[in-house]
Image (cartoon, rainbow, N blue to C red):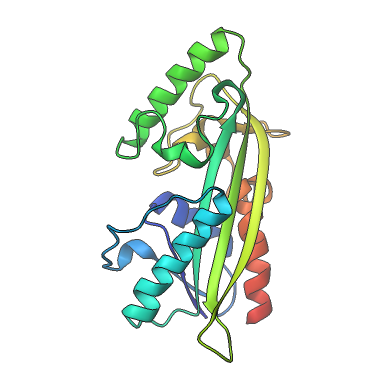
Length: 215
């Protein structure tokens, strides 16, 4: 079975591929390894699930239907963080917020932490929650119609006062997010522990179970 993870974020791909590692007969491909013209793609869903589906459907059309690549499934993923101190400011706009999508991880996190410091000094809380939705798209066995399957995860926690470990490429918030019940931020956790508690790990664990049932 061959699946495409529809993200150009190497950090996200690495996590998802890591969560799926060890599934017998499963090949996981990175969107960044394929040439695709996607300037017309617009991520404007009203929920993470809608954005995940838009990615999966768009790249299925581009790479399977149009380019003829043989993927059994295409997976889109969308995630974001909701922070009490920055109410209604991140969420769907997480990576585009603040310093913006084109900022480096370091620039984005520096802006985020500076703003967190200002808000927290004014009494706003550091409580936060990460959410993730993944959408798997594939063809119906007896028609050209596509089906969609959705998988979600959510992890409550808080933003610490400074980065506790080096930044992971593409995942700057993982250095400052401490999940409830954990004594280490996301980026300091081993793969197995992170699989258990992270928002993306929860969603992909459900995806993994679905794929294992198809093999």
